[in-house]
Length: 259
Ligand code: XBP
Ligand code: MG
Image: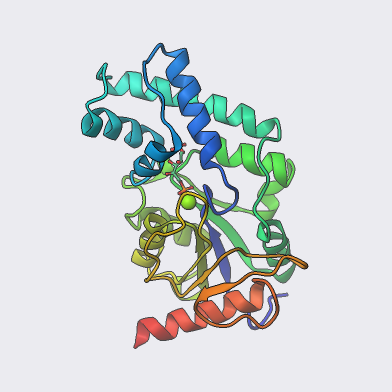
């Protein structure tokens, strides 16, 4: 039965929102460079700048063109390098290398109990989403998160709205009933471009970005005993983000866009 005050559906971003994944991505990129005999190594300062470009293959091309990295690789080699990086990342995640951020599992399970549909909208691969959810929620995760919109399904990655528009189509739920949960400005712009109100929980690589288009920004989703702090947006009723709070984000967002 659906809670009267809850949104009709929730859409989660993956990297940075469900889990702090970017250090594992960075390690996988560096290991892949080593395995392909490439003289490249991305430190966290450089990786932070490269994250402005979403999508691993696009990030690699950008690194070559904007930083003059050599050797220049053709599209096939970039694709092979990225496939290898994905398998290294997947292996680390399957081995239990990552945990979900606080509040994520609680919200996903309470949404399922309340009849609120849950999906993800991401610029990473299906393999990476599968690895993360299998390792954290278990092999039956698709019952809890039935809608998965991933990079290859659309032409343009975030900040373009394509991935959120596709997720909305698959949720079969209008933008006016959905809340997106994001950690980055690129993701925020993508969801807003699809007409979806957004709650932002910044991650280690995105803290400090401009989130002025978000309806709410909280330092964390929180859990019992792990309070969240609202940095902007409607006040919390309790001490952490729950479905009722996401309902108030939806209401404020829809009211705001009508103004
Ligand atoms: C974040 C990204 C991804 C990851 C790397 O995606 O931009 O590209 O950094 O993943 P989101 P891939 O926050 O939308 O989940 O190498 O698989 O692209
Ligand atoms: Mg993200």
